[in-house]
Amino acid sequence: MAASISKTLVLVSLLGLLVVLLCGTSKAQSNQDCCLSYSKAHLPRWALKGYTEQRSGEVCDIDAIIFHTYRGRRACVNPKESWVKKHLLFLSHKLKKMAT
Image (cartoon, rainbow, N blue to C red; front, side, top):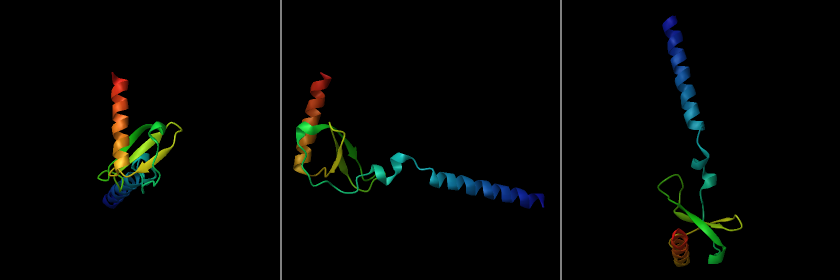
């Protein structure tokens, strides 16, 4: 009888641990932080404060650049578009100037 109670306790403990691991995802791993589609609008360079790169091989489904504006907005854009590449180059030059 004692053996069956200890087996039950072990099983309940393992199930509890499994529930905690499955339900305890961090905010960074949720889809609400991921770009699910691309914005169609072309943003002006002067409005951009910085950017974040999103990779599809990690938590999110698509590759994207997330532009951050001075007004606190975010825009998910396709990193393969030429205007996006030009804006990234502009921001990298701006960062280099700030560093020197």
